Each structure stands twice: as structure tokens, then as C-alpha cells.
Image (tube, rainbow, N blue to C red; front, side, top):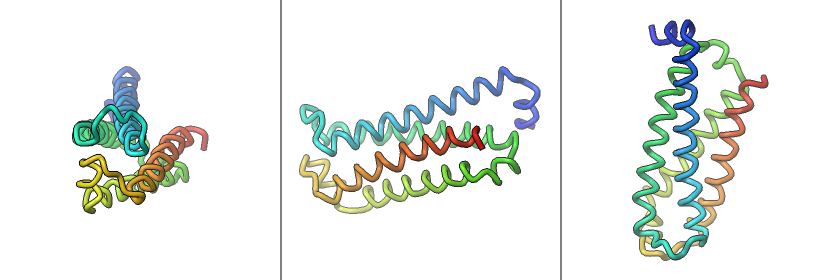
Length: 145
């Protein structure tokens, strides 16, 4: 029913697509800000304050991006499922979420909160930046295949 509404209403599709881009912007912006802080930029902002706020903001962006992404996927599921760029994007998102899960489940999170950033956390932040930029590029690539 929603897929049909998106197909027949270019305006609705436009708003869902715009909300998807907004969700991605919130997700990536929060992740990038946190990763850069972990790497040492913006040291005037304590990690103990930045991490919970930016993590929740990234989670909100992820929720928006996933919900709107499912709506957009519903319009042409067979085409998207067969699109290599779409599959790469999903793989990169899974890899990014795995990186987040590892960071959140390890003791690294407590050390980062105390402004003592271990080398593993810095490496994870670099990996995070690369993964999420790649996921955004993968998303843009979908329309070109």
C-alpha cells in the first residue's frame, strides 16, 4: 500500500527521499563528529559529554534512514535487490554497525568516556570514517547502475 502511494505520488516520494537523505546526514554527521573527537580534534569538548549525545543523535539518524530506506526499497524491491551498488551499500552499513557494536561492547567505551583514548579506539574511528563515507558513496552509486 505504501509502495503504491509512493509510485503514484511524486510529491510523497520526494518527501520520503528527502527524509532519507536527512537521516543519512544526521547519522553520518554525528558519527563523523564523534570519530574526529576520538582522533583528537575538538579537545575542548570532553568525550564524556560528546559521546552519549552524538551516539544518540547517530541512532536517531539511523532510525530515520532505515525507515525511509525501507519505504524507498518497497517501490522497486526486485531491482534494488539485484543492484550490486545497493548490496555493497548494505554490506558497508552492516560493517559500520559491527564496528559500532564492537566499540560499545568493549571496555574501550569507558576509557574513551574518561578522555583516555586507546590506540584501538583511534583505529576504529578511522575505520568508521572510511566505512561510512564508502556507504554514502555506495548509496549514490545505486542510481548509476
